[in-house]
Length: 627
Image 1 (cartoon, rainbow, N blue to C red):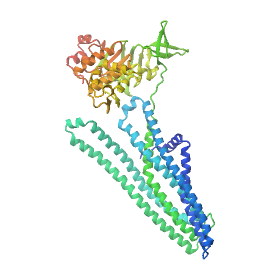
Image 2: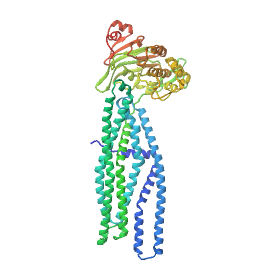
Image 3: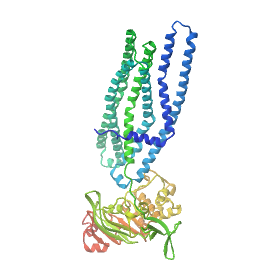
Image 4: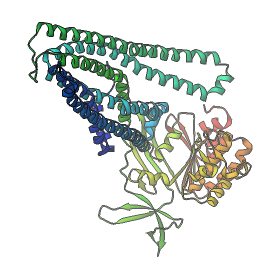
């Protein structure tokens, strides 16, 4: 069976916690150890008090009183120090726990931002989200409660065992025999409990995922009268969650009573063994050299109760520990994912011309240049123009399953290149390669004559604007969402971009205009309005190359006419790649590429392709459907 967590998870987690709090955590550990050790000390004082009374049988209180008061005063001092230690470590653990979770969430998010697009395409988003919720929550339980309790119980057990061996080896062996049986029960029942708690977490994830899916698709459920089938699907995942939860809590609930009763049996056994040793006047074996007496047997009963109680405490934390370590393992797995590689050296800089030569400058002049370091030393500046060329490009998302074959095309500055073809032909894949969301298997892609593999990804993407088919708006004002394309853009520039995209008119009719808050991906806007904002966001970025991936697919015919005017202005002087199923939007392209099964089968202007009466002609006249 697959282990619930990896071997080095505990060590790595502890190392990380010590790295987060190198001073506070050792102090907490010292306080915990001291408090735990003090909890075992009363047995020693009890033995001393009883020994004093045994030695002074028939004596007056004036003789034994001062000795007892002295022992009680010392014990009280220990308790006061233990109280201070307990308060200190509990207060510090609250800070350490929440601080560690904060830092862990930061690590997760920073790592997530560094991951390549491939990771998000191959991992369910709900599973990624569970790292921030379920896994972090199990970690909170582990850090704040389980680990301190395990340490307290461990120190207490070791202290008690040392005291027991000091007083009587024979009595200690009686206790250890009973505890050994207790540990066997913990391993059997606790192991089953932990197994089902892990299954419960997995079933909980399935249930949450199903509910989220049904909520997102509620309109489809209603339209196709799929309510009963949805209920049946929910019942299936909910029943699985119920069965695993029932088993997990059954084992967890019966463990404590069983251990308590075993503890009672051990207590009775120790009492009987102690009485037997006293009656038979057996020879005691101990480090103290003391013989069997009431002063040893009575404290042993108290220590036996403490000993079995702490074993019980450990067993109660097993489920939380295993789930916490499993959550930590999942977190570390994400943190260990390979970050997006970027070996580019060419950067994008502000430039100006002096005597016909490009010179780097600090202020933005409206002119950009590629700054390329040379092997022989120095740098070379190349004006950012927007010349894009693909030469014999092959690509596969999965090895052995090619998606693009021998793609060769060029787009000169200011040209508009359109891709048409059936779904899955490879249109969007080409634009993903231009942004280096994925790296090609073979061939070359050059931007202004520079291999894009040599350009830093952030600078490359800054030089390419993109409007996706699926619009993503963020929580914030309309103005904030437009400014997302260029965080340094002024309000005036954002409004100008909205006017260019044709979004200004509907924005001014919103309750608070550009200051209207958008929530839940702009659910208070129509699909067309959201798309207009996405186009305005790309416009404010003002890149020389623009990719429009079905940018007008969700816009009605009337709105399309408005957008098209803005798009024409937006595309003027830029290199534009257009992906469209609606062929009316690509007719004015300089060149149209017809793709089929990852290959370019036709290329040319609209008129030329119509004259050829090939696949494009069939698509345009409706003789062949795109889908």
